Length: 203
Ligand SMILES: [Zn+2]
Image (cartoon, rainbow, N blue to C red; front, side, top):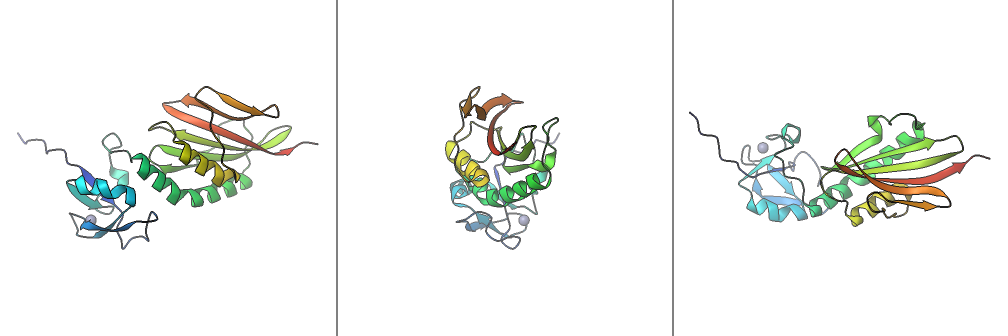
């Protein structure tokens, strides 16, 4: 009988020739892909991790989509902040444009195009909610890995609303002028933060 191969720590990285620096401050790693020899990027928060792993693979040799999510190591808090920083501006722009083009009447869940995964374990959804008496911008942030870190939340809310908003504790809501502006709850294993900003009132 064949012996099961020893579990190895593998670091998967983007190839230098495939993309410009994926995260600000990334440098070309001093280790190359162990399979094809390609040069790969390493971000500041990933550098200490790269030093410890058994193998390095580029994304062509080990596509991220093929990873078993149960075995994949979630990014460290520092890596999550880096990934969010890198993806947030484009995601916020696309989702704001989508919300304008396809306003949402909150009778059923908004469809998947209103959501973006910023980093493993952090997804955002943005809609323009059309209600009878008013319209509101609605931002949802879902965290599946750990409780949200406040730094990241304020960056995300600033990208969508132009101001940093704070999240209430789980099970709590915050009201302003009689309107619910934010609340936090647990849903399907995730901590979900909701933020509303009234953009138009009837009459
Ligand atoms: Zn490779």
